[in-house]
Image (cartoon, rainbow, N blue to C red):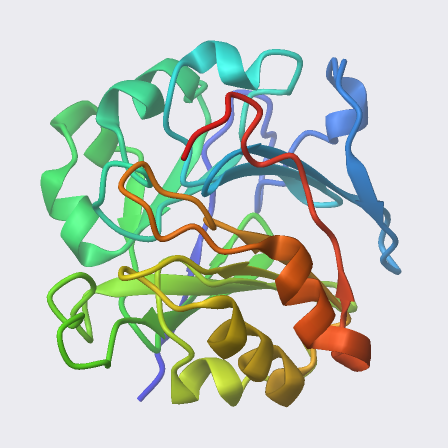
Length: 261
């Protein structure tokens, strides 16, 4: 059974009651991003590298799977919330987290990463497992199973361990796949406005499987990401876009500014 709980961020600026995030418009932003209009205000996406990205949203600044040097995030505000999907080094790095977290940053992870966190990070973290939901700073977040099911790949991301996420903004739903194949849980998603969809072999899925999933759950917009790897398995985002056709509007961000892969 899905469990929902509310988590309120502690802030020195809070007078009483539930905390709201500081609007990002009040903080310095010196980079250009990709904007998506919602009924509550724009969501702006900043691809960083591979699986790491930043979203400036009406409820705050959200970092997803930030790894690499802190300098990669220069020109962007300190995060209100950091999401971690799983423990692999291209998604989770404790040193990067420590460098990026502000005094009031909240961290949300799957249970496997939570267990690995240093104590100073664990004190600011919450864990959420597959099928559960949580509310943080007015944002409802659902944990979607992320796993391999193809024979010979299940050791990479075993079922039940890792998370994808659905972020439920006011009138706008964002799906973040994490590392996964085109699972039944992905294909069953409804009313997704923006999706971030991984694709590389052998660790996740190929462009054909990803496009097939998009044709089924039909997000309004989709970013292919996580499509290169240092040990091969690169997928072509342009080929993915051709396979998707009219099922979704494909956005191809600058996910590999340093030429990884």
